[in-house]
Image 1 (cartoon, helix red, strand yellow):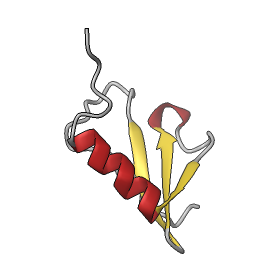
Image 2: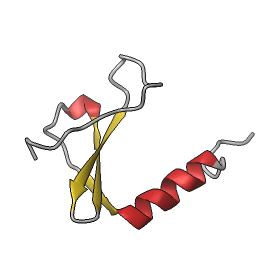
Image 3: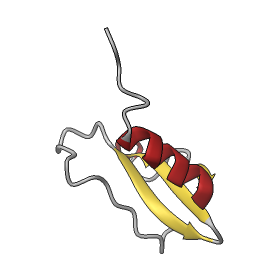
Image 4: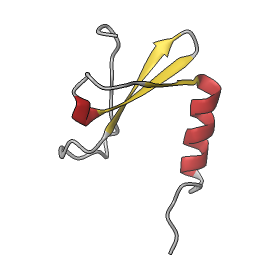
Length: 66
């Protein structure tokens, strides 16, 4: 995974409480915690799963409600 380009949201701060995302090829997207500095686990999703998650996030499906 050393050759994979990881990125985080431009809205992320520099406090280390972020996730990074990478296109892993073969229809896969990886997500990892920045605090692990590349040493922690990587969650892997298909492109379809990732698109569904992003779509839901844009629609507010994961927003906390009081």
